[in-house]
Image (cartoon, rainbow, N blue to C red; front, side):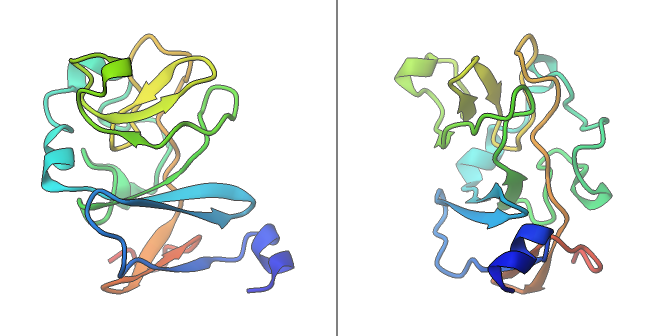
Length: 159
């Protein structure tokens, strides 16, 4: 689509064939950064057992399409798609930090940090309790056109 159509909200097609496990890419949709994270099995393992530490572990608030209302908040567990804007004041959180990142503490399970006011999110974009961000990161409508082709901004067929 043209730049004007993209700004108006046209869907954006993304080739994820070169996205290696553990890597994240950022694309633009509706003028917002959208993250596509290829989670490793180790990253996925960090998503269990955090429920008591999360503000909305079951994603009850409407921050994602119904097909992404699951513990990994995605269609495919290994591919996470989220709008990279903190739900507190609209800052852009930092990259995905791995578990045990020294500046975040030895007990850090991995996830995203918004350095502006300290909100933290797990690798499914779920916000931790007692943080300024009121809700989980938003998951935009999206679907797979093929095994390695993602369409962000449309979810007519979320398979």
